[in-house]
Image 1 (spheres, rainbow over the protein chains, first blue to last red):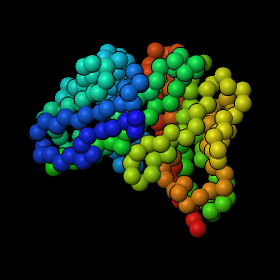
Image 2: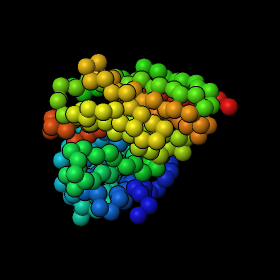
Image 3: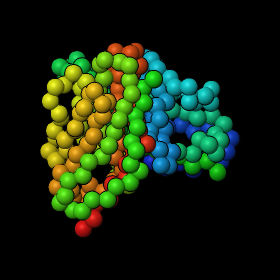
Image 4: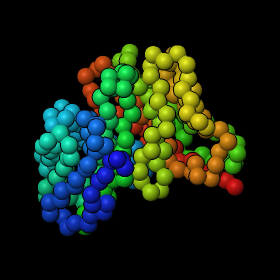
Length: 119
Length: 116
């Protein structure tokens, strides 16, 4: 396995259009995260999945944002009616259940991100 | 509320010298993990090192070590023998283990430039 994969790497869209991003986590990882990063800032948490269940969502995640992980493997993040303020890098990360590693916490592994530009 | 503070927007270090990147955190949870990530210009976040709140010894991974001072709530990253390839953004992050949240919280980062 080569790590977390995100597609596309870059997306330019017109304001008002819908966009969808895909994330393929490391195969044995049951935890999956979406983050957003703007220039000069650290990643901001958007949402978290444990297997197929979406267990946590940030208040940043407006009604225009929706995420799915239908079979507990890959995940999609959709933004409807995009706005210029949505322009950012969208990062996906995955991690293993800590107890499976004999630990009580584990690091997240990130993909290379999808850079969204809304014009 | 959990928070990470990185007060150094940018740092310079001479090649082969050591450098310390500062990180302080705030949490009311007793069980938490602290992480450092490196983000080169390519954009990918690369995991460097992890410290658990109950770990008594400071974590080390090759040239990276974490200076963990629990009472001061600081988790500084020390890079020894800096290399040109260490030039990147560095982010400190924290995850509370028992508070019911799963997210990692990141600081604003420190941009490190290694000089030849």
